[in-house]
Image (cartoon, rainbow, N blue to C red; front, top):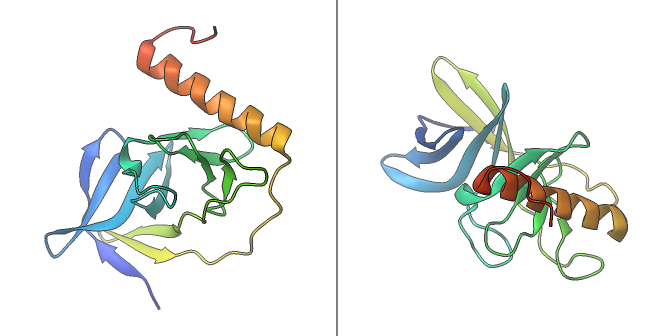
Amino acid sequence: GDARHFRPFEQSAGKWEVYDDGAVTDILIFRQGQKLVATQRGCPHAGADMITGDLEDLGTGLYLACPLHTYIFDIGSGQCIWDPFNPPRTETLRTYDVKIEDGLIYVAERRCRQPPLPCREVADKIQLEMVDRALDRKLGGDASW
């Protein structure tokens, strides 16, 4: 089908830039535990490089926070579930199915039906949890104010 294969180069722990014939592609691969997930590299809002974004499993799903404005994307659907607007206006983040076979990583763009967005109260809680976890990791210790 539409699957493309790559030999990724690790950028930092659990995050890879993807190269195709020596050129960086617009695809990033993240490792979350034993699972690999792939997304487009640029944030659909302002083009920030998502390789420095924070990927978190909050128990309700995997979420990726844009490093520039902390917009939150649901990795399962690619939907932006949090931005300053209610409901969010940011375009969907392209996500990819990932499989490893014979030392190659295969990615194919995921085309899924968009589930309903969470209510604003739930989205705000997810966004705050993402920020707290990122601060804990980056500053070490309790990020509660």
